[in-house]
Image (cartoon, rainbow, N blue to C red; front, side):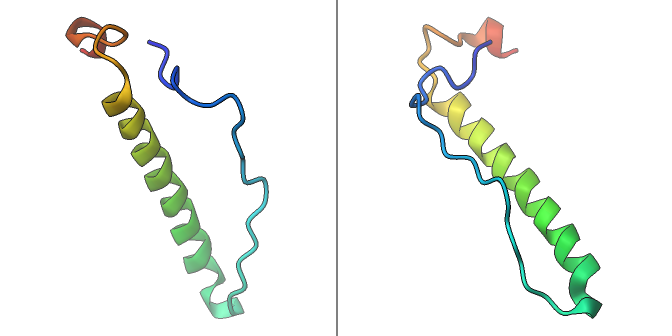
Length: 63
């Protein structure tokens, strides 16, 4: 399965994200940033599944 077949050839990747938080909230901010990344990747994957044409990903390939 080649998810992302319809993506543009130019992708923009965030290499560094700097968040300014207090020392007492550092651990919580790191935890929430990791969770945000996981949720964003899951959302992008599901968007790719929905937007993939039926002739590329049929029910047999999806299962």
